[in-house]
Amino acid sequence: MININSKERHERRYQRRKAKRLEKAKRLEKAKRYDKTFDDVFNFNNLCKAGKRCCNGARWKTSTINFEADLVSRCYKKLDEIRNGKRKFQGFQSFNVVEHGKLRHIDALPIEERAIQKCLCENVLTKAYSKSFIYDNSASLKNKGMDFALNRLKEHLRRHYRKHGTNGGILQFDFKNYFASLPHDIIKERINKVLKDSRLKQLLYAFVDDFKRMGQSDGSPVGVGLGSEISQIIALDYASPIDHFIKDICGIKGYGRYMDDGYIISDSLERLKFLLSEIKRISDDIGICLSAKKCIIIPFRHHAFHFLKMRVFLTDTGKVLMKINKRCVKAMHRKIKIFYNWVRCKRLSFADIYQSYQSWRAHAKRCNCYHTLRNMDLYFGRIFNAVHSS
Image 1 (cartoon, rainbow, N blue to C red):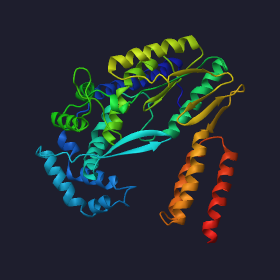
Image 2: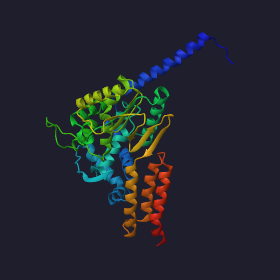
Image 3: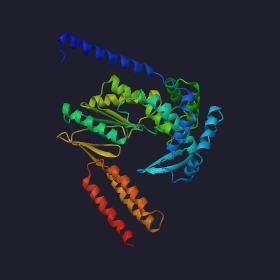
Image 4: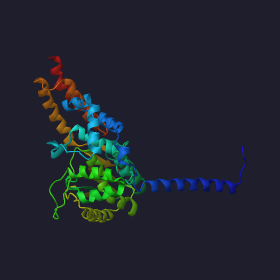
């Protein structure tokens, strides 16, 4: 064992801290602008890999089967079009869906276009944008998602309870028509800041222009569509000024955002009212609007709040309980009855119905709802016993 005195130990610690600071400074310098070129991103190997991954989870579609069967030649053709500036937008496959009683307009892309966007996102765009994201910006990123967001909320609530008990409350905010209200001019300014290669910029500008909708008072186009990977990355980045204001300037640790749903935890309700006014100010500056109905301040004591379709309680003993939304349970009851009729008329097989039910069940298992799941399993078995017996 080597004997060293206190002065040498201090010097070694100083050198280790100095090396860490230098390494962090290098990472920050590199993060200012992503310097990958067009040819680094769009080559035949990258495009084929992206096209193959686009087929995952959609191989039951005829268009996907045809694309995968002719993957090599189609990727080669698309790569040639992109390199020579001959890309022609094929249009959206637009349709409406009703999710939890809310009508949503979906602009789905043909699989060739999705392959190009996935190649761009995986090889440059996600990395370029996410370098400036806060840790608690948790949607649509690798190793993050809904489970990550809910776990971070639990951690923030437990940390708040250790310091302040059930004093204070939570501010929840949501944006009105978030995707459909993002101004294209500000989106392109952000693109110019994170990308260096001019050809990559022009291609991304073209993807944004594909989503031309109604203009603002000055006539500039606004909005990006649901159903596009590029739209998700743009939407994640667009509200970043609010993230950095809350985290960096206000120094609040109990903050998180999942796409357009966010929350702030504080021991002072008056401070939450001030922060709401500041969020409204920043939102107006960047051209988006808060939803008046969904921006609410809820005290912790004797109250529950909703986040990502979960009903959340902070108890007097510091325990965080999450219950599934009652509307989701009622909706699943209705679905099971509809599924039963579909199986009887052979519109869908029982295996497909069972897989859909297990998907809902996996979502519900995130909550503290043992009895709800047990009762739903009994109800599902009672409804479909007649199918198996026949």
